[in-house]
Length: 150
Image (cartoon, rainbow, N blue to C red; front, side, top):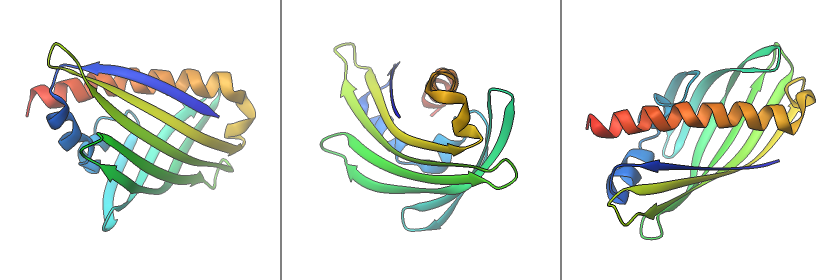
């Protein structure tokens, strides 16, 4: 399943890039993230609580900052997570691309290629996409606040 999302931030691309490459700081802006800890190099462990339909899941897994191209303002993050209690797994490749705006701000585009399996996957793409859009809207508000407070 492909989920494409775009948000506008009132900060220059360089500031947004530096912020987006700070995985723990970004994690604090994602609704439901309980923890993000560095494992080694560009690999992080994390926990995300999310509700999909009537099911609440506690996804534990890893995020790897797989590619970084500062000049091209593009990065890729690979995610693998599961909830053993619910019996669901998520694997995703998230591509982040920043585009400068004429007003000095930045458009942040996130394209996620995700596979959601088990009970979580049974709810279908429409419900999962709607949940992802809600998370992204709150994430955008949180990132905007974090960038203003820097």
